Length: 541
Ligand code: ACM
Ligand code: ZN
Image: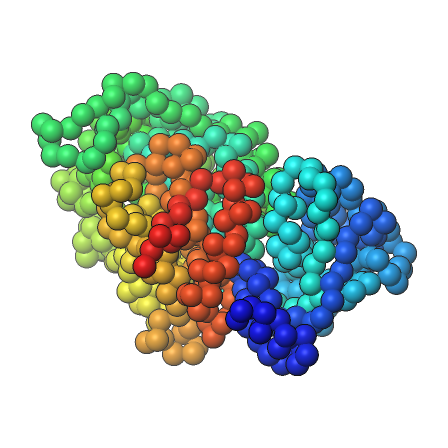
């Protein structure tokens, strides 16, 4: 009944009334501004797609939409470059649109106009068009569907420049085909960043041509903890070799795939901690000299890279190959969870502290990261580090990824450093999202959908000037307890959609009940994607 009333209101009043969920459109993320008008546009086999710009990026921007139509409706839009006045989508670049990722979409009965400052904006407008079509657009061919969308006027742009998810492929390896699927899901929700966590104690996952043992040895472990983390003496092991890695060809394929979906991939190479897989291959990079085995247990380990010249040479060689492979302006260098015990007891580390006039091992870590930053900058790139890189002093241009709550992000923004918020209080998607008694085994804690959704990445304590350093929000998916792609899917969405909306939609437009209605409607599409999402909100109070 309420819906009918709303419909009447929109039909006869027509203008100026805003509801995120106007006429049940169920768009996720919610657009910044939307007005629903009477009438609808119908796609048919004669509908044309007018591209005023014929660049490869513009072709990419419209490709997904046309592919979906071809599959579901058995026709695709004919692309033309000459003006058409009716039964067409006109896609054009418009430099007057303020945000490089923004778009304007006008759907009238006979004509759709989609404008973006860049092809990326056009791509996001196309994702909106896709969501405006019946959900069967996500399926294989189906007859008797009218491919109609309501007449709307949308002006839309993201709130933040960084909107993304991190996937840990080191604790459990995720095949390239799943990485494609994951990237598709990011793009569908208008996210623009995939943070690829490629190295860990439990596995090194990226081929480095200069150091073949990294993947020959470091990509495989010979036992893995089974089930819940337990104390020494109570642990169960599978005693099975487990592993995998991406060749440089795989990495290039994934980067090329992501580019077509306007997704930037930020690679992460962990240092100085979480490096046991690398040191299993090259034990001379450690303080003790090893030997080491690729870890089969989860947690934080005392053996970390020793800051000797050989280690810097190794890391610079690795980072050179990584910088050559990835077009991203950023390389994530980790920096988290590096216990200082080995450095305290290492003659080389202590001599280096003295020589450099450092106060302690925290300043030694800062020295380490600053050297790496200098090198990364010599490659024309910048570093991101987890918030521990604040300890002992931040490297001059580092961007901080705040994970231990927001405090690190706040401190960094106050020092005029850029910040990405991914606090483990809201954005750790490996945490339980429903009652642990009925959920698959997870690492612990509890972050239900509403909690993730409730997050505002700009802390109230920051001044407007400091707030400009908050680049956005990211969800992190650590895979200690996520053995398969299907397990990852279950934890990633719908909470990933809450992160997408937090990153995209204006804070003033966020409303959990409204989001919940829209996301439940989106589940029909997730089914078409064959995505194993969590359905806990269907039964929550
Ligand atoms: C982290 O969760 N150790 C960044
Ligand atoms: Zn050392």
